[in-house]
Structures are given as structure tokens and as C-alpha cells.
Image (cartoon, rainbow, N blue to C red; front, side, top):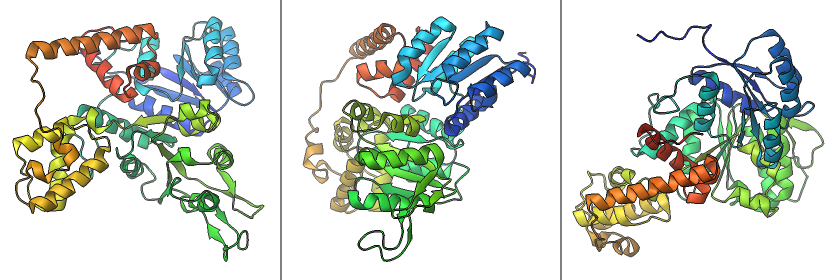
Length: 455
């Protein structure tokens, strides 16, 4: 029998970060993963803990006010020359982080943090055994009837959501248009300790630029034409709860600067006011755009990106999780047709083969149309939109040997790219043209099969 870990044998991990959201996320994650976290909000506080408490590993942000993570590393090395130290860095700091490895850093991780990669690094550094799945799988909280998730990709994503929801960290939700980013934000709030507080949603693309600042921060009476009375903004309304900022990429540079201050200090001013307001609202943001690309173009602030993306959750496109299509079809047909779904084999084949560029939104509309035209009866090909029927002709049927060969080609592409990019998962996923969550799931499967997917 394997002895259970005791208080004395559980590795202590020192977390050093001035960002409360980041500390909250990593603290929750480490407790869930079987470690004992100690937290410090600055380099000097971390060094004080090291002087009084034995730790197994230190994880430190690089960019902090006062003493940087690099300086904390150098001073820690004087008294703890063999302590494993992992640096967490934004892309702009990677060159410094690489240089810091000459000063004794074990490794560095780029933000937003990949939790699977983080856990593997911690386990390796502290001598803890690996398991088939990096993040321990717990039963998911009950899902609303409107959420259908049978595919491994979506189940893995929802396990991440359940974990991250418990923390106070800010979250950036990414994915193509129509994948369900607002639904994920609803779950994040419902599964969080703030569930009894308000959930305030703002679509930054749907509100005129001239009114968005007032919508977010409120205004004083007479501050502009039409401001007939004082109005509390969405950040005030979300105090004690959650604010969801959809289409965050559409925000102007001026508003981005004001939003940055809210993420850093929780402070803002109403339009037309000189008095500061304080808000305790957890920020969830969403976009279907590539924010890193917008940063390179000078259209989105890099510092705001890293403040919002303490953790990034990417929702896979429907074509990446075709296992969910039958259950989604049954769900939407019951919603619109009021009866059990009845599909001909040809219709089922069309639904599975079509690429669904509009994702869940397009799928829902197609099922609503089919339910209305079929009048609750059997759904036939002519009940589907023409673009979906276009996939009616069956494609070539692959043999078992051909399917195996395709799996081998994919496996070799993943392993070669991973090694070439020195096991950087973010760059590997970008090079392969898949989401990081999809790559993580594929790597978990390869690890279970015995393939070398870790550095």
C-alpha cells in the first residue's frame, strides 16, 4: 500500500507575485494538485519567508514593482543555492528570463500560464510522481441543460473552468465567433464564490465609442449632453460580483488605459467626476480576435493583455469537437420541436461533415429551421439549410489502415514540432494551427501511450 502524504511530506511551494488575481489562481491550483502554497506579494516578502520557512520550490513573476523577480532570484540563490526557481514572464520579458537561467532559474513559463505545463514542471522539480492526466479529474458541478459537453475537449475545458472559477483571477476567454464565450462566462460566475453577487455583461462592440466609457464607469449629472442625472456604471453595478467584457478588442486605446487602472487598482472615475470610486468586481473578458497580433500592430495594450489574461481559456470550434454534434442536435430539436429528435442517416452525415464556420450559433439556427419545417416529424435533408445540404454527398470511406496512417502522421507532426520548438506548447499549437487546449488534450493522450511529450 502506498502511504498517504502527511503534512510534513507535502511540498511547500512559494508563490511570489504582486497580482492578487494571479496569486489566487495559482494558490487554488496548487492546493487542488496536492501541494501547500505559501504566498508573497513582493520580492522582499518572499526572501523573508525563505529565511524562516523551508520550501521545496519558488515560483516568481518577473516584473514586479520594487524588487523584480530576477533580483529576488539572485538574492535567494545566496542562501538557497539549490532551491528550484521557476519564473513566470510576459513575452516581452522572455529574453531576460532566458538570461536569468544563468543565474540559477530552473525554467520559465510564458503568460498566460498553461496549467498542465506548470504542474508537470512542479512535479518534476519536487520529485512528485506523474499521473496519466496532469490535472486531477474531479466530478464536474451540475451543468445547465443548455450546456452540452460530451467530447473530451469540452470536458477537459469545463474541468479547467470549475477549477479557475474558485479563484479570484481575471480570465480571458477566446474562440471563434459563435462558440459560446458568454455561456462559459455564465458558468464561471455560477461556479465561483461570487455566484450570489451580480453578473454584469457589456458588449464593447455593440455600444458606440462615445457612450462606452459612461456605460463602464458611469457619469455625473450634466457631464455631457443628455446626462440629465447621475448614473452608476457597470463596474459599480458589478461590485461584489463579476463583470463580463465581451469583444474587448473593440475598445479604444483611451479606454484601454482606463481599464488597465481598474485591473491594477480597482479604481476609476465617473465621467465628469474628480472623485475616485472603488470596485470589487472580478473581470472576465472575451474576444474572437488575436490580441497578440493586435499588440504587434499597436492596436491593443500589451500591459492590459497580461492583466486580463491571468489565465486564457480557449473554446474549441464545433468542428474540433464533432462528438458533441448528435447531443447538440437532440437538445436544440427538443428546444424548438418539443419532441425527441428523429434524423435520417443522411441528415446525420450532413451534420457531421459540415464545417460549421458559425459554430454553435449557426448550428442552433439550422436546428430551429429544421424543427419548424419538419413540424416535429422526422428531419430530412431538405429541412437543412442549402449550405449544410451541400455536404450531403458522402466522402471517401477510409480503411482502418488508412485511418491508422493518418493518426501516425498527426502524431509525428506534433512530436517533431514540439521538439523543434523546445517543448513550448503555445508556439507548438500556433504552428500546428490548433488551440492550446486541443494540443494539451492530444499530448495527454500521447503521454498515456508512452510517447515523450515532456522536456
